Length: 411
Image (cartoon, rainbow, N blue to C red; front, side, top):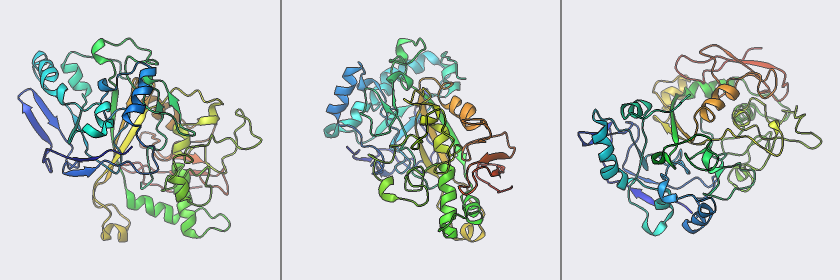
């Protein structure tokens, strides 16, 4: 199933906020234009289930899809922005705001069931989110401890969708509060909500492209351009088409990338290897972003990883202009607006960033940082495994002043 066209009822171009009344204010990032967007997922990503299928799956785990916001279980994605408006509400009068939330805003919220019911899909979808500051103002607290296709590796959430080959299956409570798998005690009003992480990543795209161009992997049979493309794929773990580098170790395979029955169906285990002895990274580096974020067989089989999130990304900023391409220098800001949902931020986003992406000893000693999101508080990051002709070669990545992708090779 694909989502239908969502012509918006609002005209918010170059507007950063809208007031419903004195107590409720909706903030919209300036780069989200709410004119008209076709909310169609890229063909490489799983289709949404039909409403009948979703209801049957949800019934098996006692999940009420009318109580789950439409953007949580299926994050509207990178190519089709702005179909869901995130609402950040602020009020000096907590009691008054709660009253308005229940009587004015809640009836307007688009549920998962609303999105899946094709015959009655809304013309405008609305979801709400609260900042930590806003929650505290309401007296609510909790313990919160670059052209590459994204979203393929999102997990299948029990009660919402059947898994595709290789897709992780997670209990509903790893994403939704108060459901099976959520280990915390939640108040009744929080049931089927989720914790949202928003992260704005500025990207130096011309500099990243320059880095790949100047440092091609010089494998036999590859042109310099093919070597540059291979380096980028090994950093991400996927080619730009979405094809996993583990299954396409030398060249992109767009047909594989576009096939959701195949593009996630692997474990990193090779013939003759055991789950406790996965030392080969000739096909995919241990440090690759995809492998760091979901190690699969690197942690043993059957997979028992409990650190999953549902995530999505929206690119912002203009396309590269001719001056930026010629000078290989960023002149206009662009990047990625990242969101993730999880029932426990400490066990989800924070764990993935601190314990895996930033951990130079994960999943093996000497692997180094995740080359895409790994952070060392501005210091240089050392990584091994990116060069398939010499996987022991250490490569130093130098973080730019404002971004993650000013990269330099060193031996």
